[in-house]
Each structure stands twice: as structure tokens, then as C-alpha cells.
Amino acid sequence: MNKTRYSAWSLFREGLRGQRGWTPAWRDRDPDPAYDVVIIGGGGHGLATAYYLAKQHGISRVAVIEKGWVGGGNTGRNTTIIRSNYFHPPSAALYDLSVSLYEGLSRELNYNIMFSQRGLIEIAHTDAELESMARAANAMRINGIPIELIDREQVLRLAPLLDPSPQSRWPVRGALQQRRAGTARHDAVAWGYARAADALGVHIIQDCEVTGFQISDGRLRAITTTRGTIRAERFGMAVAGNSSALARLAGFELPIQSYTLQAMVSEPVKPCLDLVVLSSANGTYVSQSDKGELVLGGNLDRCPSYAQRGSFGVTQSVIAPLLAMFPAFASLKLMRQWGGVVDTAPDNSPIIGPSPLPGLFLNCGWGTGGFKAIPAGGTLFAHVLATGAHHPLSGPFDLSRFASGELIDEGHAGVVH
Ligand code: FAD
Ligand code: PYC
Image 1 (cartoon, rainbow, N blue to C red):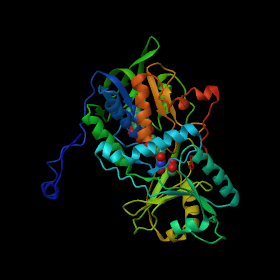
Image 2 (image 1 turned 180 degrees about the vertical axis):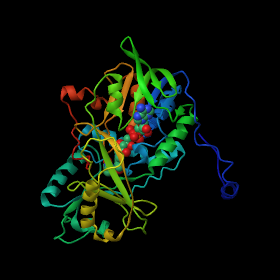
Image 3 (image 1 turned 180 degrees about the horizontal axis):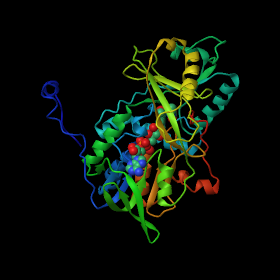
């Protein structure tokens, strides 16, 4: 752990000296020929897994192999919503563990991830939606997730810029509220795990693409990369957006489709929205960043694609309902729009556990919602890689559920799909 403390004077001096006295947060390594565990993918899940392998299991001959730069995938492209209002008991347990771990993460990593538990509301626009939300809220409470159903007046007090008119295209009828939900700084989550993992001896190797798998006697022994061959006892794959492409290279198919998910931000404005607002009926959501930008997004671009942008039609289908709900936002300029490629499983739940190729383990299929799951995903995947067996919470997410039919359908709780 980096114990350096900076005084106001040392910060000022570094500013004057062009920051020459600051050391990098983690070391850029050349790959060793062999490790105990190699993790492919330097996003939040890969880095968190490496950190927990070293911290909780004492395994520090670990490398994280990243084809670009740390956090340059979806971990650095998402809209940072953290919540645990999922329906089925295995998902509730996983996502709520993640919220709890997020609550202590800045302290755990000694790195401010700016977790802001500003709360979240998912709006009901019709009586039928409110009725179905009441049922969902009861199920979530039975799963131990504190969720409240609030009425129209409470919603309008929480988000006064919402159009209160019953004639609105998207009238407000009530909402599901999770007070513990919120947002965090996405880059900081990646950087915090990277720094803490590096301090525990993990090798973080950037600009190194995995291009092949070397299999002998039916087991994965080594990977081929753009920087040489690397052997390991066990390999983990956390390559959101590229999972099925890499699986095919390893000789098996995954039940995953890759789609672009886009998001956008407005120009920064003074604080006007101090919670996250989602609408599953029209698939859009909005929050305000600490910088003041409104962060907007919506459903997937449903044309399978590896392009990290998104189509204009979907951009419009995000903006139109949001402007109907928040007419005041119509005067804002849109500053940036981008996309990320997400891997979705048929039941909108992740896949964690062994792959069909002995020696290779999977952490994938988080779809539109894996940022909130990074601390729990890392904890569970580290357990799987360290022991070769499931963590009590990861068993239901095994790939075998697609053969047994024991699906965990979170289509609705995913909100954005
Ligand atoms: P990534 O961060 O994508 O990391 C995977 C890494 O693998 C990448 O860095 C990539 O370069 C690397 N890689 C790929 N192939 C190779 C290879 N061959 N060799 C070496 N490295 C390789 N989730 C939420 O919970 N809340 C949200 O609000 C939210 N909003 C989103 C908004 C958008 C626009 C997008 C795109 C996603 C959103 N998500 C959200 C989903 C979330 O971002 C992802 O589920 C999560 O970041 C996945 O993390 P990861 O570590 O698995 O993947
Ligand atoms: O998982 O909450 C979520 C989410 C919101 C937007 C994209 N993903």
C-alpha cells in the first residue's frame, strides 16, 4: 500500500515542478514466462480478481494481461450506476455483496473512488407498472434488499425537474426507491484496484494482446500474446465485449451476444439532480456527475457489433423520452457520445466459473450492468481461481445453467437491455 502523504505545500510544490516527484500508481511490467494465475483483461473485474487473489488467498504470482490500457474497456466507458435491486435470490446476494464492498472500497484500497450513495428511483408511469413494482419490491425485501415504493408526490419532491403533468408522454405515477444506490468514479475503481494489486506483487501488463491458447493433454497450459508466450497453472478470462471471440479461439462457444451500449453527457451545469433516475418502460436513465454534466443512456443498439460508438437512431430514442420527462434539459448542449461493447447472456446474468477447457475460467456476460458488480465479481472469481471450486455465491452463475435450464432471468431488473 502506498503510504505517501501529501501536504498542501507538497501539492503546490509538485504543481510548480511539473509533478516530477510523484511515482506512478502501478509499475508497467514486462511479462515473466510463467505465473500461478494469469488473468486476461485489465478491466475492473480482472484487476479486482488479481487484488483479491493476492490479498485474500496469498497468491501473488499473478499477472493481468491487458491488450490496451488499464480501465480502457467498459470499466472506463460506463455510467457508474451502483445498485442491488435485482429479483432472484442469487442475484440479490451477489449485487448486494457488491454494494456493501463498494461502501468500504475507498478505505480498503486507500484510494478515493468517490462512491456517492445519492439514491436511485425507478419510475412507474402507469398503474400497471406500479402494481408490478410493488410485487418486485416485496420480492426484493424478502431477499433482504431494502427497497421502498414511493408515490407520485414523493417522486416529484425528490426530482422536481420531472414534468408533473398527467398529460406528459411519460407521466409519473410512483417509483421504486433504493437509498443505498448511487454512483462512483469508474476510472478510480480501476486505478485503485490496479495500484493495490501492484503493491501486493501482481504484474500489470498493458499493451499485450492475447492471440492464442496452447492446449496439451486437454488442458490449457499457456497463452500466446503479442509479447510472447506465458504459462500458468490457471487462467481467468474477464474480457467483456470480447468473451465469445476469445472463447472461439480457445475452441468452445459461449451463449453470448455482443452489442453496443451507448451513453452521452451534456455540458456541465449547476447541481439540479441529486439522485439517479431510471425508467424501465422507456429504457432511459439520467444522473448528474460531480462535474455537473448530465449523464444519459438507454437501451442497447440491437444490431450485434464490435463498433464502440452506437447509432444515431438509438441516440434519439434515448434523448426523446428523457426530454419528455425532464423538459428543462432541452436547453442543454450535448457534449459527448460514446459506446462500449457489452456481452449479454440470454438470461441477463453473468457467467462465473470453469469453462469447457480445463485450466481456463470465466468471468463474463455482465451485459449492461457489471460495473456495480466489480468488487463482488472479483471476490467470487478470485475464490474460483484460487480453489478451483465455486464460492457459495457463484455456483448458480455456472455456465452449466444453460444446459440444465436453471436460468436466472434478470431481464427486468437489468433495466437497460
Ligand atoms: P472491461 O472493463 O471491458 O475490461 C475488459 C478488458 O479486457 C478490456 O480492457 C479489454 O481491452 C481487455 N481485452 C479484451 N480482449 C483482450 C485480449 N484478447 N487480450 C488482452 N486483453 C483483452 N454497469 C453498471 O453496473 N452500471 C452502469 O451504469 C453501467 N453503464 C454502462 C454504460 C455503458 C455505455 C456501457 C458500455 C456499459 C455500462 N455498464 C454499466 C456495464 C459495465 O461497464 C461492464 O459490465 C463492466 O465494466 C465490465 O467490466 P469488465 O472488467 O468485465 O470489462
Ligand atoms: O446496471 O444500473 C445499471 C445500468 C444503468 C445503465 C446502464 N446500466
